[in-house]
Length: 226
Length: 226
Image (cartoon, rainbow over all chains, first blue to last red):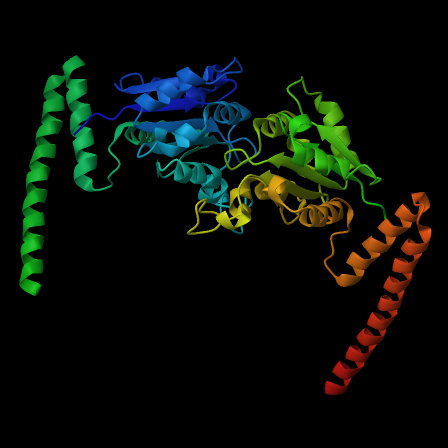
């Protein structure tokens, strides 16, 4: 499986002071092939930005929701960098994902609730952009009310976020398990606790064998039914 | 009927060089109670902007579509000016409209067509903003492929645009006619051709009387049916 290169385009006017952004940024440190482009108000070198985009397989726009969209820094960057060459084939078959932090519960985004529209509806402009560039649009990754979450839930988000950045875009179980195995193996190299990591890897392997047996069984039962 | 005050917030990085914008701007010159705030990259005085918003009954965001949204100038202005006080009651019961110029046909914005989504879907973030501020969201006013239109169609857009800016938000025929009468009367004051304007006014008045008679007749018929 080819390694996936991920570029995070981060648009937060004060990301240094945002605990949520700092937590997310910190959790990318151990991930190889993930890089971050921090947007600011400086002059944009279009050529350099296009080079970054060219190298990435998965492009993530990460930002706090301001007035039902990204902060203007991201729009400024889009207005300056995007052009016909990116539309025609510069981004073809790459993936576009959104990591959106917000100060409201995700449940508020629905018909009949305070925000009236779902996140899918609100971020339609990005879906339209992905469509135009022939990119694969990933499910939105919302991070709601992060400062109020328990430590356990924060850790859960950390794992999901790392998967969102680096996992191959297939939702089957085998793929999710593969991701855990490769993460564990990369941790093992640096860890002082190799034994317990090996233990987890072994039980994942056992599970996999049981699962494979079950899959064969199901297949046989289906054949008998025909 | 109270006069409607309209504020156009114009976000086009090069509106001086845009024939479409110049045409639209020129057609507002004769309209009293319509003012334009030209956005640029200068520092924003939040207090002044909120004062402008406070005075307006109808607020129009006018811009070319860039990447399925407004140019970053508008987002920057929103990010700087909007706050809780505007949400809670600063804009309550005011109207929000969008005048969107674009280089594609409106037909391209539909499921199964090149842009995949309708304009209503693409501009959902503005509808969500209007909802949040308890404003009335007006139908979008798209200006598609303006430079390629015939002179007749450009004039038609001019009239529709002037209505969009100044007409009371009721779609019945009487209201539309009232708008024409008041525009004609305001033109008459400055015109050298008062006679022909009077002639048009007279025939509108005759039509109105015929229409009123018809309405009475329809009402009577309905009563008889009951």
